[in-house]
Amino acid sequence: MSKLLEKSRFNLDAAEVLIKESLFAPSVHCSYYSCFQHIKSIFPFFFGISYDQIDLTVSSNTWSEHSYLIHYISKQIHDNIGYNEYSIFKRNIGDLKEFRTKSDYKEIEVTTELSNKALSIAKEINSFLYEQF
Image (cartoon, rainbow, N blue to C red):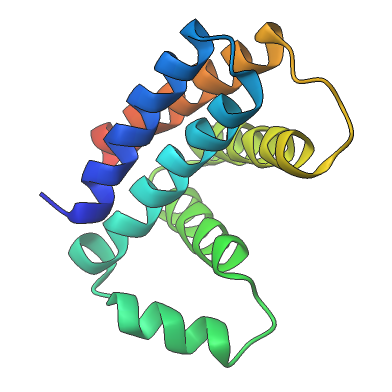
């Protein structure tokens, strides 16, 4: 198993533990990173793109690594799986990324509702990625 996929699973587990301990902001962070790490782990095995190639592509463009990987896998979902799945994935990953940004960087209270919503979306994304890749 890929180390990134293992970290993805750890982050999903951590999000659940953090919610149980009422540590809502870091749980959102873990929910998002469980998906990001899962997405990144797919690249060498399904797209033939190494982690070094990802680094080179990102360093030679204006993309952030997160934006590049999410854009690339979204296009693959659109082109190879279908528009409906693409739409759901884009909405879910966009919402989760927005929740993580608010949780990590904004002067807001992160509630149990937001952290549970982030965890639910992360589980849905991870399940989809396991099924498709």
